[in-house]
Length: 100
Image (cartoon, rainbow, N blue to C red):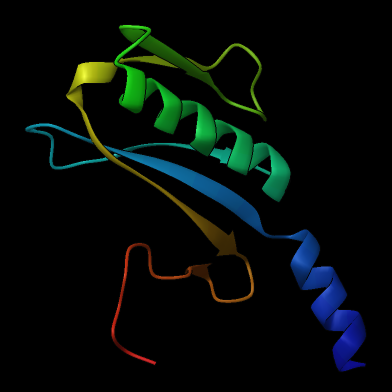
């Protein structure tokens, strides 16, 4: 029974790619259902940060096709990828933690 529940809960997880912006207390984030898709977006943002090109980065919502956000690459301070699950009622703590 537990394994069946674990399988169901794993399908309810999404992956969040979160951008921290200069002088902004709130991050900009997009979600992807598949880890491979989330990693692709994460790598896309990293490459833009390394190169400084393009100047603008457009990210879209996977769920709502017309929902988009464009950010100025030079204003991105950090990018992180983490899993958000329905099982915990929220998400794994983003960032790095020394707690176990």
